[in-house]
Length: 459
Image 1 (tube, one colour):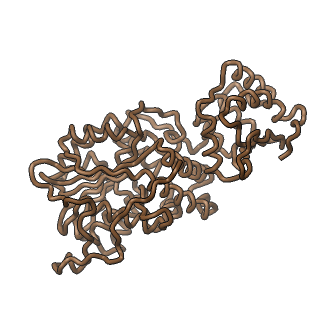
Image 2: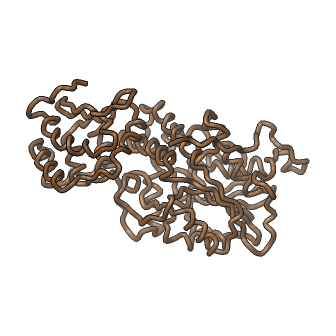
Image 3: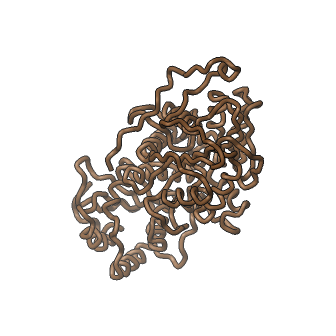
């Protein structure tokens, strides 16, 4: 990249005075280069040792979006629309943008930005129309209809697209790694087993999986632990594929997939309930009713496992984020303390709490790698904008878990009224073979090692 002054009248020359003022306040200096639609460049004043990635601004509309929406949402819209791109590693580029945290645009700089964008023809009277992949939901927040619309926006993209990203296990939640080098498929199989063991599943018990996705957990629990399982989802695409998988596994007599909302599930009691990656869709204000409803479905002494993403502290709902508009509309993340309090208020006794933060960072990086390896197919299945949404989201979320901005916890809780009969140590019993379910002595699968925590990642 040339270090000379940009050509007079170019986009880089027009924006150079503004960039210089902001660069001076960036801790360690700006580590990312900028290239504009006319080919002019603003090199990185402080490139990292391996060289500076470059953000390519392909259109003045990208600048207009950021001026109108000075937040991650403005940048996100430009990225999804294809008006911004990155030359270099996307994850490294996003990590380097952390240097800009807390560096806002001062009033004088905003005036400079407005003058510059006007000269560049990027400041129109009206804000550019949001990309088609951005969702705006209508109706009362977390009503049955609005929740259904939110879930269908997120999950009814393409089952084949999710298979490319998630792999053959079709598990769309944090895996459980033995070490940082283990394959995603092996770690997801281990996670399914971890959930079953923590619930201490026994042959013949009734299991409810709230938000069952494509049915991976209920299939695993029925096949290896001999339970009778019900999976509930409000995604038609998920329900269709989950039922197909149940038929192919020959488990239609043990597994039922319902296209229904959890609020319409009233056929308790269940011995065990799993809520894996579901609580994020419920809404913080609805947590008391959510856990009270699950509590009402459990038999006395029954056990609930809640697996969900949390924030370090409770924060107010914000729908002007990239995630809220493009990925998880109406999704809300509570603090772990809030989740535990609401579970206890519902009459559930927390018995075990485990953080899987580092595991989710590893999981998301595997998903990102899968998508990168099959990008053309992903575009063919989901469309270019949706592919860009998931490419940015997965690697960005991985960085958030590595930094500790987000975490994920599994909480095991027991209902009162009878002995819960959970084992004294975490892990529980070994899975059982089909012959064991038929009455023979239980036989553990020798290939299934006891779950172990992954080493902590720095960051």
